[in-house]
Image (tube, rainbow, N blue to C red; front, side, top):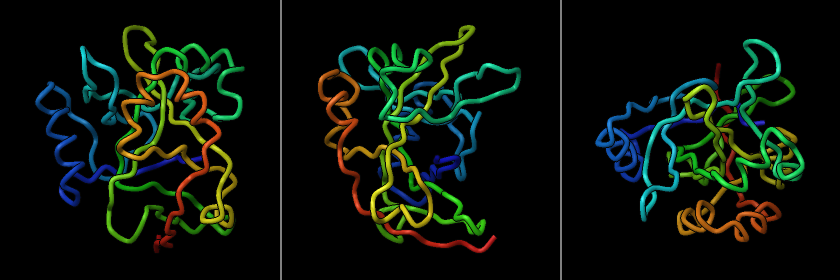
Length: 189
């Protein structure tokens, strides 16, 4: 599912640059552990180049107070709630890792290694009542994730960000991509 991630500018030079771009553009992204509904740093299309903004994480749901934070990559183009956003307004979540909980309720941190490396998650966004909201995309888990959870984020490499945002064919094709091997680190609660 991917219900939380980290955005730690103090621990990662690349994330610090992204954070500064957001601040320079007049935004204040949530740092540390990011929860659904937080204003999170997002990379999206801008005038001639990508830009960093903040958006509320999650689309309003069908019931009052409901917040939909993820969209399945396998069905995103068939779901009316997400298809138009995916085709026209893709974005990227810059993170320093994400969390999942195992069946025995142990919290696990995922990243490429033990350090808070930059991990980019594919997403899309839509404007509701004048405010931009985003969802991140999930996919089937690979071998590094399957023992902990039955879904994982759709992860982009840095050199794929512009293609994801601007190239619809690339984005559609990328929905079927194999995900990178990640390291799981159990955390004490």
